[in-house]
Image (cartoon, rainbow, N blue to C red):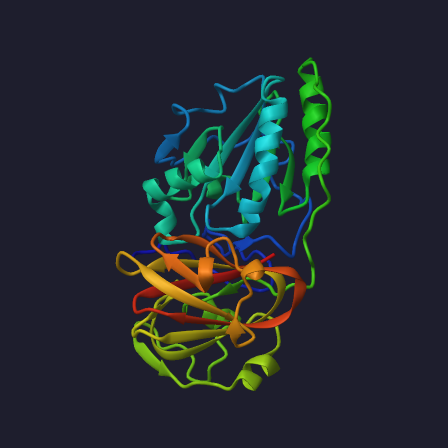
Length: 357
């Protein structure tokens, strides 16, 4: 797989802008939430640029949508923070579309496999997204908006100006207030407001963890003393359960056995290779892919088989079948807590990230 190269410096959730560059450091927003200042606020919204394909709709332009309120949602299908917002985005569309709200999902990929149209189409079907999706594989629209995060919503008023933006999860009430105000300006007859449940976000949970030498080396998420050797297979020595526990649930993981070190991922180079992860969360997800047709993952919790009621939706019987490039739920615990996750994988398993909820 190839990757669109972007110059990145990951300092917390900050954005680094280099002279002459239009690329921005990007972050999936889970620990940062809220409305953020935007350079474009109150200014004309940039047009859709570099869209390689439209799904659920013929090609659209903001000029065509002039006079309507437009919700632009930057998302990517393997991002759990994005996935958790989609039911509420659907609810906004169902409640306010007839009143004049147009929602456009701009799918801007973080990983190379997310450029695959069939993968995006499958995600649209899986999450039952009824609104237009603009495939932003070359990040043209992302860069036009100077965007830096997934998910990120921009609201465009009837005159085509950016009126509001919100980054991350938990913004339903703020977004609804703005949507209703903007629709009122158009003279629309408003339906009753949606009663949204409170956000379940836990600020103490383990942060998202990236594998691969591009991100992982900078963030120092790989705790093995061997570290990364870019483009090479490394044979990682086993570590004790106590060593894993002592590392703490702060965003690091351990590998055991032979692993190929890729830029975006690590790939098991033998059957029986392992991943050890200390974490604090209720839900654990992995973004993973098979090098071939399929890879398998055996899941243990604190060194023991996972009780059936705590297995994730994608781990029936404690086994995850990785037969696509996607997000997989490994665990769904009764409550957030500190634990140790062990994954024993088949050759060809590719690990991209761990995410939590």
